[in-house]
Length: 114
Image (cartoon, rainbow, N blue to C red; front, side, top):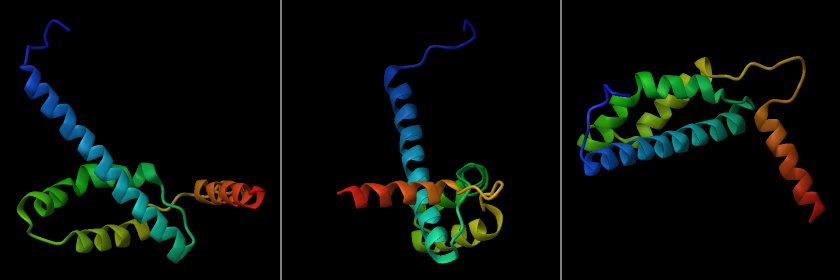
């Protein structure tokens, strides 16, 4: 703790807000990809695998789109979907339902109870 240097409060707030925006944006990208993958392919997305790829390999592409406008967000989403289709599939364990199937089951039960 003694090696942490002091920073201005505004700088710290800016850093924290930027990380929060990154988390929210990443979650939106992952959720839309997971939904599209489940609807089109019937497969569940591994959020862990996809988030690692998004943060470590695709963050620069996302920065280019948002800050410089060098590409389109739709193209980025299509490329990330294609990558997720092959690399980010959730592995099924012993004939148990995956997370997306469990969520749909719970939603169906709530819907039927109404």
